[in-house]
Amino acid sequence: MAKQQPKLEVVADQKAQGTPLEMLSELAGEIATMASNLKRLAGRVEDVALAVEQERESSAKSMEKYRQLKTLLQSLQGEES
Image (cartoon, rainbow, N blue to C red):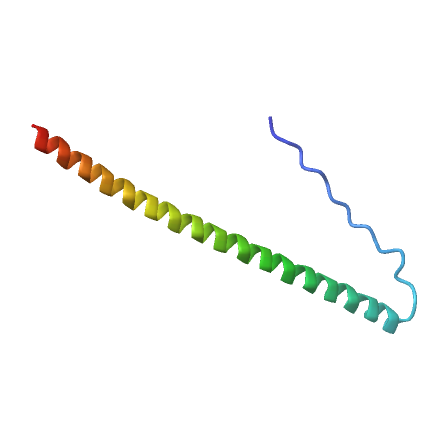
């Protein structure tokens, strides 16, 4: 059963009162806040990317050890025959 997506409604900002210069100043402040939030979010994305890379490297090392063990076990089986 498909999940119904909530509908988003755009609501006009009621506090857009004052001089155009004041409104521009307010908008600039909002943009600065958004930029700050985006920088913080980008930092978090980078942290996760580094963690994923470390995990990938660890998995690759483990896989190499597994292959070495498998090869060793196969060679030991061949000696027993």
